[in-house]
Image 1 (tube, rainbow, N blue to C red):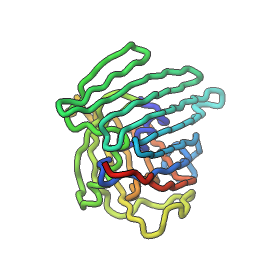
Image 2 (image 1 turned 90 degrees about the horizontal axis):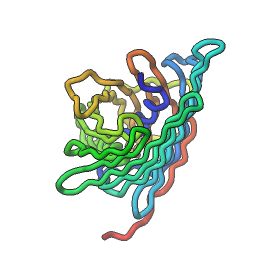
Image 3 (image 1 turned 180 degrees about the horizontal axis):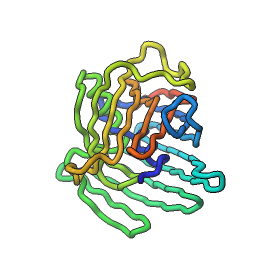
Image 4 (image 1 turned 120 degrees about the vertical axis):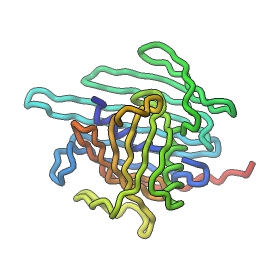
Length: 259
């Protein structure tokens, strides 16, 4: 079973096309086990997206602790440091997973050329090189694509997205617009400008190379047009984890000369 903290990391890093770039921001989330209003809090997550004229810098820090019994607690978490070029043609990253004190780190780079998109990954099982399926989006270039499709009024669409933290390969993400507005939660605050467009969406994640298999998990979220996510629910079929926005710091886009 995929770890809840890692699943939330994926939810925060969904598929971005250049015309719909997300706004640089730092967001803090509360993690809860289950969807109920009184669900126990199990951790927190920080998502920090910065931008300069050279590209994007993405940092995530997720930590959770689940009390399975009075004596047995499961502590899991993840950290990601990534740099992605504007336009989504290259990615450099370092991803670390934690579980009860044990640590696993991987490093990788992804390069897109007119001929192919290739990933080189080094981790606990050695180094590997893979060719990603055509059209695979990189993490930041993944949210923009999602926002752009929603802005265009598309209610159902697929996308391929590279994942650096769980499978180190491409996910097939099936996106569907949900009816109505995702219910407010007790922790909701007015952190975003009033009147900003937002869409409730449902996304299912399947391994991109094995699309005939059942999805590994699903995510429901409220997606704002500036790329911020809120009211996330990650469902594996066995466990459900929520991530609710607590604080938000929106930053200006850099002023860069046109090339």
